[in-house]
Image (cartoon, rainbow, N blue to C red; front, side):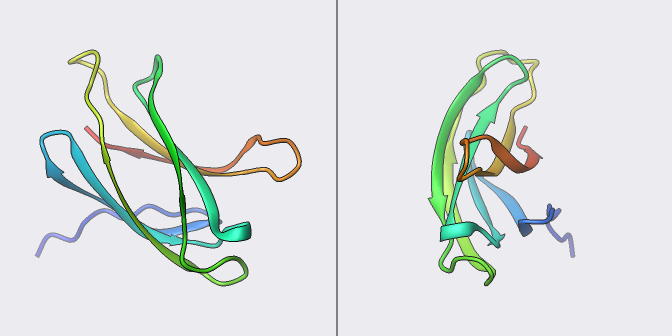
Length: 104
């Protein structure tokens, strides 16, 4: 049985990516996030192709579950797309606890 690769850091755990179409992905995992709100971007090493935010079903100190889908296409065929999920600082909006996940 092939288990999906999981990604984690201090704020995110058991994060998996499932490719559900040519350029569609389903992301699942858990986050221990202040006010349950986190952000994500997809970048190719040169530019941000897509971004958004999601919520977990519980705020810190609990671990809340999340699941969301994204659809994104490459601008350059030889580039690698990376999904980065992160928490935004309540103080200054800077990215914290970035978790990079290669898509394709």
